[in-house]
Length: 229
Image (cartoon, rainbow, N blue to C red; front, side, top):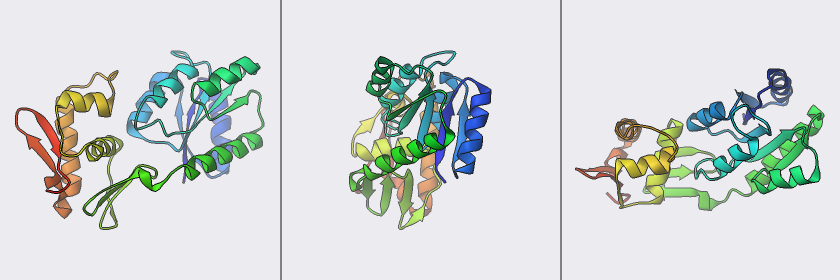
């Protein structure tokens, strides 16, 4: 079931959207402001975002630009929902990285059709280039799945992003601070100890296949992914 994140400060609109989307077969997540949306995106990777232009703590435009600068969320398509319907506003929204623009008030049926069209386009862009392989370890960025010998690993979103970054940059040693910048983002104030906790969780998930040995500790420096170990 595909998941859609609703970023909308008006609860009545969120409720209406949740009802329409659930009837169409989608799972929904809800955020009332930009801070909540960013928190959700740290823990989940929705298939699409419905974004209101005006939020209490930021504009939808600012939030879209932030998302598109995030290596691990930049592939999520975004549809803007707003009462700003002038041509200039639409151009601004699309230039910020939005995939489509729906003016309020809107028909739920039309919105569902637009969501389906955007998801089809986004799925068609996914290619084998989004798959990283190390021995029998396979990470599929498009579907956000990790498998070993066709066995699926149940990784959390942060462990997925951490493994993704390390597999894309093999045989290089990264300090905890560098991993924080690339995986958690420079605007997240997280202690370096957090990296150790997530490395431990990632190794635990890989251990049944002895693939935990691919993630090596370089004493006094940081961590390295060695695909041929």
